[in-house]
Structure formats: C-alpha cells, structure tokens
Image (cartoon, helix red, strand yellow):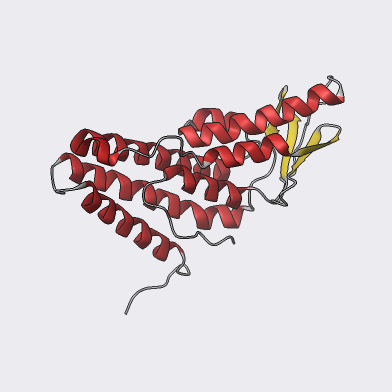
Length: 220
C-alpha cells in the first residue's frame, strides 16, 4: 500500500493529489463494455476529458460526478465519498478561518497543486484498445486505466479493494479533524490563525499515525 506522506496544513488539494496517487493502479475487470464509435483522435480527446473531469470532481468535492465517471462498486464509492467529504470539510475550515481571522487565513494566490495532476493528464499518451484505454504519463507516473461503458469513458481502475479499505479511514479522519477544528474556530477558541492551523495539523498527523497502525493494534 502507498504510504500517506506528511500533510501540508494549508493545502487540502495536496491531499487530493496523494489520494489520486493511491487510487491509480490495478484495473478492474469490466463486463458489458461498449464499443466506442468515434475515430481514434476523437476517442483520445474524450478519454482525457473524462479523466480530467474525474480529477476535477474529486478536487471540488463533487462525489456524484466522480462516481459517475468511475466504473467501481461500493468500496470505490466509499473511497470517493471519503475524499470529497475531506475536501469539503477542508474548504469549510478555510472559509471559517477567513471569516474569523481575515486575510491572514487566505491561501496564497495562484497556488493550486491539483493543476499539476491535470497537466499530467493533458500531457499523457492515450493507448486505445477497443473499449479500453490507458493514459500513460511521460513523467513515469502510474498509468490510468479507462473503459468505455454506458455510453462514455470512465476511470476503470483504482487501487485494489484491500488498499482502498485501508486508506479510506485516513481520509475520513482528516475530514473529521477539519470539521472539529472548524467548530472550534467558529467558537473563538483560537487567538490566531497560526494556533488554528497548529491544532488542525496535530489532528491530521494523529490521523496519519493511526492509519499506519495494523488493524487491531492498541496502545499500551
């Protein structure tokens, strides 16, 4: 399983990129795939557009759109819910912090690490094989498997079910950390934005540490 690195306290989108890195992997076996009728050039553009829309949906906290572009089951759905809930909770934290502390809590302008992932998709090479396609990046990142089904291209493979089940609780915990800290900021618990960010960071680090423990491990 891909290890979750330390989280940047000011950047919820950075976590989304980490999530995407964890997700791309083993392709799922698809049944009843459709046969796209468009030419290769049009298909390649459609494949990239679908991958971009999927990534953007995750980054915007849009679970419905992300699920509509993922050929997965309940495990994948829970994983997408965890990521999008985390993104929305992080956004709410920032908005609450800005309302409480003003400009000091705003993100630096132009800083959007999610754009790196979208640029990677744009620069990728599309390999078409009937109703299946693979997006391969020149940067050497893991390929993104795609499938044409139900009349459109979808992401065909996330990480395997075991990895998803192990990773999902981390993103659930990060969302919980953001929500708890947001409530405290709104209640006036912290004197400065730095204090609030420190509290959020400590909760996120605790979530990361907990996610690395084997199931059933307890502290003594």
